[in-house]
Image (tube, rainbow, N blue to C red; front, side):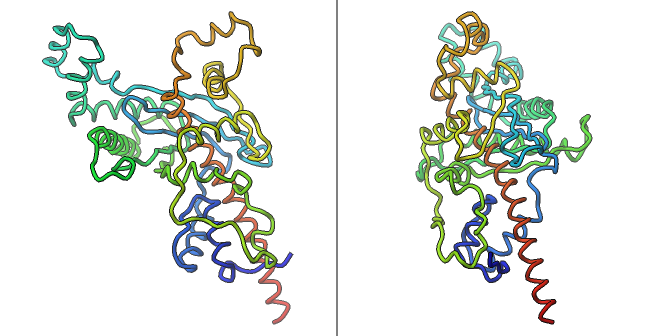
Length: 350
């Protein structure tokens, strides 16, 4: 198979390599080549895979998953075990931190709880003094899962390209910034019982879901660096908008074990399996009624579209990160092989 160095690859090949490793696909050929070499030299996961904590930011709907990555199979994505797949309401955690005067007002209210939260708790919960403590407690709770890698969904500033910035968006961004500050402070102070603090990364959702639009293009082909290929997939500089239904379908295909993506997901416990069952719409045939009721106890409403949307995003983010690292290793080996071959040819000529 004819091979050549990165500097002589066509633009579409450089863009495809960047895409496969989760990097930007815009810029000059020189910039793309520099991005590739930088990505190749920067592992996204420990050599043994380790544990990923993937977070989809939110206030009423913060979702996260804990993924164990095994290094035993041919592909990293064929050794994924879901340890935790959970969604929480940050507002529920703020009420114990509210000032005494706010708590006093809450006890005097006769309106429904939802209205009280909307009028009193929400305003008080998002003061810097209250939200900072909430973010700190949340950081400790997440670190208790002992991850090696933490992925935090990068928040947008505007919704649907609108000119206005919504108040709720500002609040989520505020929590995002405080969570990062807490994690970084804990990292610098080393006030934790961990051998090494996890690596932390921000992940743009614009690069996650579009990555799976063509599932057969998420792994590098053996002829990616070949002279015989004159054209390849056309990658848009503007990421395609993928709606929630399509994102959920991508994940359902992974959970159902389709061959195209070469992804294998295992479930560590019944709680995780219930979420997966809700995602894939599995029927009652796999268990008797009493077993299913026992597993579903305390998890009412898990199958609502809103919950599944956020649970989908945190899981898809984690799996995509593993695939990017998988591709980085494959491409690094390919680049090393053909550059060694080129050096041998030069030595023979000399």
